[in-house]
Length: 263
Picture 1 (cartoon, rainbow, N blue to C red):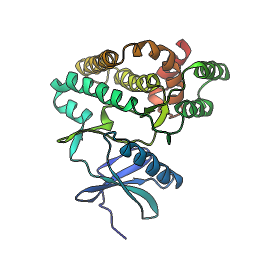
Picture 2: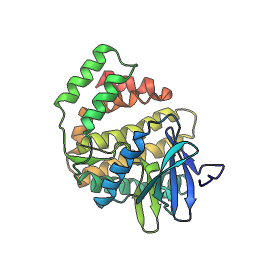
Picture 3: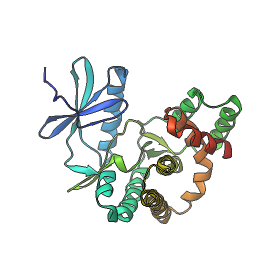
């Protein structure tokens, strides 16, 4: 059995990323994650890559130290977020690129993907932090919103875009689904705007201003490419906010509930 390096090169709530060899990395799920998640990600990531969407090539499923993981193509590059953090002057360029890539993704349709609305409904119904009245209000809104058949990443933000010499590549497709582009854009807008709100007084006002400029430039570029998308955001935003509450990110909870109430 292959031995892992002692330190992951990246990690998130559900998995750690390790170097596997010179051309591959291992996404190793944490031991509490259901085994079926690996098969699910293999199927979804494979379908995304085969559709021609810029994403890492996928390899075999492996087991290391009793945990299951997935081999991915190793990308030689840095995330869009990291690049902007060290080269602030690239902010506007990257914001437009974020929109360009998302439009490219949202124009695709893949039959294997689950329904975005079903995913949202599950999260809204299972969060413990919404009153029954608020939950019913949001579900009623979700029911009248368009289903859509477009590819939605579901967690699209600048830390999930890797800038490589061959071009940008989008990673982390576990939440990919079939739905309305408006929902996907609302999710990205929420992540960026909540980031600015969470920053509060803890960071330099210049950074907060940069986040807001990035968001505005991103939305303007998407609107330029897909006229009318902004008109959908007001309808989707309370639904997306309610679903995100189920992720239980405590510093965001108050702001998210406020968006739901005001929606």
